[in-house]
Length: 159
Image 1 (tube, helix red, strand yellow):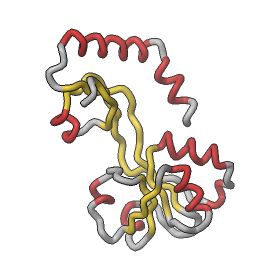
Image 2: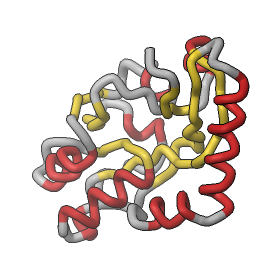
Image 3: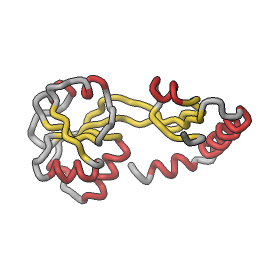
Image 4: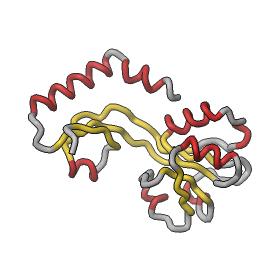
C-alpha cells in the first residue's frame, strides 16, 4: 500500500486509509447520441452505456441491470464509439468527458446535451497509521497549492 494516494471520497476508501484533504469537486455526467431522447438515468434503460472498466459512478446506474453497460478503456474511446453509433451514451467525469470531446474534434451536433448524474469529490488519502506530522505537512502543502491557485490552473486546462 502506498503512503498516500488520490481517490473519490467515500466509505470504501475511508476504511482503507485516512482522509487527508478533499481537493477537487467533479460531476459524473452522461453524453447521449443525438435524437435518442436520453436525458435522465431512467431513459438509459435498455440502452448501451459506455463506462470505464471497473468504474463506479452511481448506484442507480451500477445496480440497474436493465442498463446495458459496455466497458470502454476511457472517455476518448467512448466518444469515438458514440460517434460511430456503437453506443447510445457515455458516462464519465465532467473534466475527462469535456477534454475527450475537445480532443476528438467531433461535431457536437452528433450528441444531445450532457446531463449530470451526481457530484462528488476527489480527496487525498494516507495509509492508516501514518505519522500525524506527515499528514499535517500534506494538508499544509495542499492548502498552499489551493491558495496559490495552482490546482485551479491545472483543472481549467481540462474544461
